[in-house]
Amino acid sequence: MHRIPALLALLLAVAAAAPAAAAPKARPAPARSSAALTPAAFKVERQTLPNGLVVLMHEDHSVPTVTFWQWFKVGSRNERPGITGISHYFEHMMFNGSKNVAPKEYDRIIESSGGYSNAFTDYDMTAYYEDIASDRLEVLFRLDADRMAGLTLDPAVLKSEIEVVKEERRLRTENDISGMLDEQLYAAAFVSSPYGWPTVGWMGDLERMKREELVEYFRTYYAPNNCILVLTGDFDSKTVLAQITRHFGPIPAQPAPARPVNSEPVQNGERRVEVRYPAENVSFQVGYKAPAVGDADVPVLDILDSILGDGESSRLHRALVYEKQIALGVGSFFATRLEPTLFEFVVEMKPGHTAAAGDSALSEVLERLAKEGPTPRELQKAKNLVEAGFVKSLKTNNGVGQQIGFFEHVYGDHREMFRLLDRYRTVTAADCQRVARAIFRPERRTIAVLVPVGEDGAGATPP
Image (cartoon, rainbow, N blue to C red; front, side):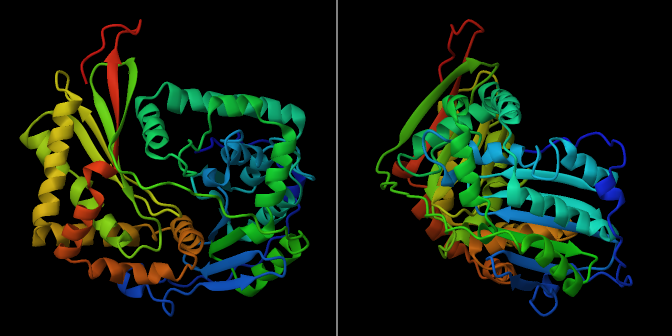
């Protein structure tokens, strides 16, 4: 979820009274190139407080700003039927009042100090970040420690905010073709994986969720020993570690949460689901079962993702949009996750063309890649694009913090980011061919098809 910040209001006392720390003398920014991505050149200091809170710090004094990330190791995979959507609900509630900060005051305090805040929820994590001038940094530590220590969960605010979440579900899922197809794709693809329900939650669960369940969920997953703090930008590590220790150190650890149960069986046959909805043309999504983080073939899947769907020169765009001219758009998507996931394809057909025609064309592209592998030019282009994309993500304090937090949580060690580019560079055409054969198998796939109907639900177009 991308939150819209509250309007700038009166300068609040807690922000106005914040002591201004002396910023370190500015010096040139460290190089942002693949050659500089080594632990020695791209320094990240890691500390763990006695309560289990992990703190990662990367100094960059090129501009007097700082980004502060908080990665809570909880997402929709940590839920269960009956409380689906609770992780995303907490993303909302974390901005709605804590022990010493009234509801709706969080954004006002940050913005009155010239800062900005936002957050997102995914299958594997809930992450929060703030961008702010470096001399106002301790404002963030006070605010974020206060909500970690004692989120209010006021019944009146809970009732109001759940309506906001439900409306978000209506907007982005129930009345959005892509959202509907994606939700049904995952629900059909996974029988007993915690990825089988949507991050936003099922509407029935949002309507029945109880405050006691929220209190228990917060106590379990928003504990300091289940959180990673990432600080990037213009600061002195020794100074801010002392400040973090002062604000976050007194918060007690909690028993480590149990690992989610994933009893997903092997898929031995294609699964298919239809979504009937008023629309002008057909679209569909396909997902193939793919491995989780830690599998040696994950870097190969990133390269295949680029070969198949990255830009107008990608195989799928050339085949379905340019050559056959049967699709308006086509793309692929693969993301590294903690659990086995899906390698996805999204196709929007031209009016008058069926999903069957698009699916056949998609299968032809995948079969050819599995049979012949990529050309040397394709492989090198994909490597260049993937490497460039990763390096470009490190252009800002915010991007650096996001990568450090992601690798620390999902890969289990932020230093894996330094090894990733070498793993991409060693991918061969034979690797791509082998992995394509293993992943793009008909019996491992699920397809969700939009069947356009009239406003009254009649007149379905053949898929």
